[in-house]
Length: 500
Ligand code: CA
Image 1 (cartoon, rainbow, N blue to C red):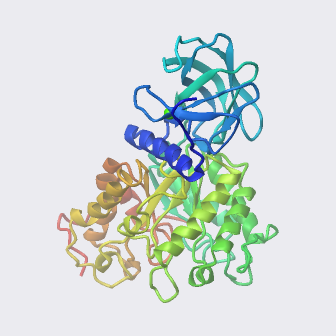
Image 2: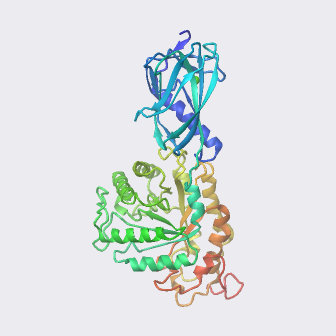
Image 3: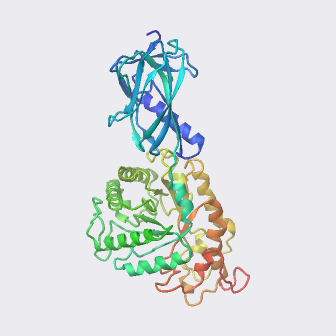
């Protein structure tokens, strides 16, 4: 009982655990597949009966002491990335024989481990007891340590380690997504799209080796009388006809072997203009619930291109706030649904580092099921709105620089987060009759194969059936589809031929 210090500051305790957790996981850089967290015994958020004292064990700090039958200690919540067998290392000291320690879940009461602490021969003679706990559950966990039958032990810290055999993390998922396409303007601008139309487009791209489809969906704006969700509350109208076709489309795509589907909240102008965070929050709770039974090949992109109707960027703090709220609602439904975050205006590459200077509130770097996205229409002088000629002398650097900007963020702040290019393409509608511009072909040929693949970024070409048309509804009426695959015919070797 000498050297007793009082530690009752919950804030400090929380900080201690969080700091250790984040440090361990980011240092290992394995993005939560490896768990290696140390919880200091004295960093509890609540306790009954125990006290603390300065420890002389290696590393210093304090240890829990004064343990009697019925005493307990509860720790702040940590997140376990998988259900499975974990190794527990308890750092203990005891001068008595037969004292007991139990590890349990403070919320549910489930007991995970219970053992007799060895007599170490001294009150500051420290020994590590290694135990295997057969099944700890994935998700949030508040550990409780208690004294079931006999006290007298001291505890300096306990370590939890595991090589989680998690599969289908965001990185696994994005690696498998390869090249993909958008069902552009089918559910974000129109209400008369049929399942026959979406199925035909999906089948056509699938046959060409495309393995992800992004489905832009506008929920909170009326489209031809169809409103998927209340713009003031975010509550989804589950009886909506368009939603039925969307579900049919999603389920069909998911039925194809190796196919991935991304759904999002797309235009949502009023939501963005008025910063309706509660609407996005409720919207994603409802979407997550509606699609909860779908497998992990379905991904959720929280909010497309969050600019205001003026074109101005959404304030970064507003986007972070509403993204966190939506993310946390999704996580109440599924801990392993891949969630996609992005920037705050047009989804340009540099917006992500500007907005997401840290991952506080979205897993703090411990959630292996988050991906980042951006849109690649850079340089806009070449890719943008159907300018008539396509003589901008872009170079490969224009294509790979935004990818590198994203990867630099993903490998630092993003803690290894994978990157998905959710839109890219060239608005070439003025060339519908004769598409003979080599530069456009070159853009499509090199974007995915030459630059995105070596950078481990999955892509989805923007195909809206209009300015960015590739599939015309019943056929490929140009050879851009083969360009995306890395090979298509040019009329000559000169990049700018046919582009004036
Ligand atoms: Ca300690």
